[in-house]
Length: 328
Image 1 (cartoon, rainbow, N blue to C red):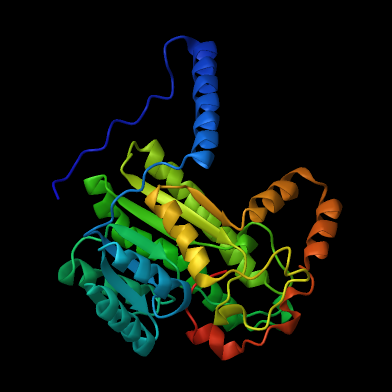
Image 2: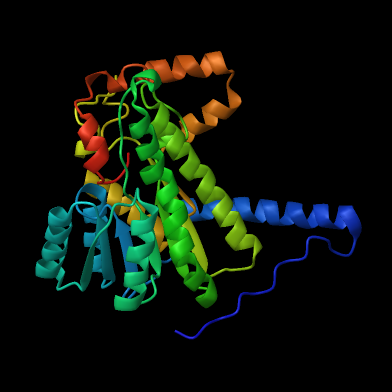
């Protein structure tokens, strides 16, 4: 693909002084609100990802595998990263049998910076430039802070947060060079509203939310209109990651089916949506957190079962070291 120079960065000051800039800001502000409302009812057309190189971390199972399946159906070239070689190879086999997809498998522990950099170099040589990067791999320890071994706290941040920094630093430069690309970070609803016994997990996901927000600023403020970011904040999903966990009122906030969730994520990616909260109730809870007094919001999260959600968790410490199948 021929490199395209980004448009110039907009000037921060304009003729007309503060009043003129304020009026311009208000015009753009209300225009953006109108467009947002319009797109809620009439989504923009979906972009084509045929032939695009899509790299998915944690592709061996769960959300990662289903996302790979959706991209394979649309004709993308798949680069599959997972710590589990067997399950990752199985994903590739399924995609090749069902869609005759072109797949490249790499066994990578994304909690290890050196492995990320080594695998990224191989991908650039063996496959080419990555057009869409999906940071999906995640781990969970599921303990109160004082009961969580330091090694698991470190592991949580290495996999759930720092891995995003290293993968983006590997693949974003070529996207900017071509002014073409998309970075998708799978965070969690617990990155907006925390849950009891998820101190390290929620903190890492809060980090992903902030990382994606500022990364988006850096791209937009630098004038790149062809490079996009998408942040996904979902409630818990029916994968092995939160096995045994239950919401207090599942009829109000049920566990998400993997296929339904990935369909929603794909809709967001293909229409370049910045933030996706699943279900939409997550948007409302995040809003309440901002506007309500802390004690008042505490009663809200208690009602939804934030205090007891992890009480029936059946995961083991060893799962945190090997289980990288996505987030919730």
